Length: 125
Image 1 (cartoon, rainbow, N blue to C red):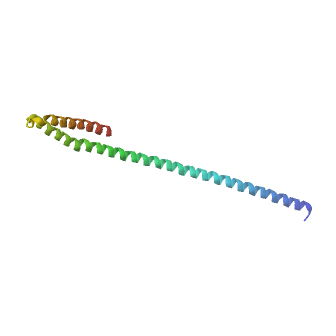
Image 2: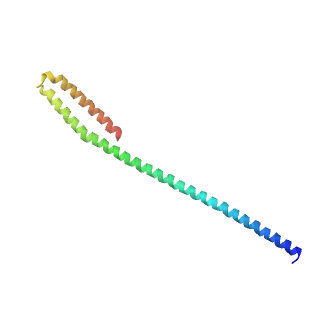
Image 3: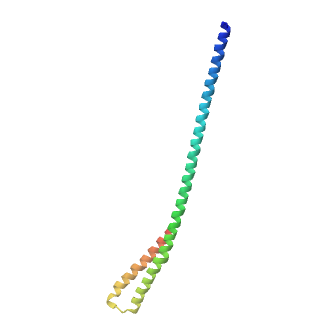
């Protein structure tokens, strides 16, 4: 084996080694790119999931508030209306003259409570 063949072997070895290093660097770069794309995809899926979760929570909250509004309006409103009717009947019958002013005050409180309840139930819906 002569000097020329030795130099040629060393040059070829160096070329193959450089090509190998280039191939490894390209592989590492592609791997990093794929990893970044994968992490971005996971992050995007998480964001979509969080948005869907928030939308579901808002729907449940809104449905609950509507139910509470209906319950307030229907149940408590009916009871306050009945109490107001009883108070009005007491005032109309005028059986308790010395207490008519206090009964009138109670009537006003009940009527104001009814107005507040109606306003509140409308705001909830």
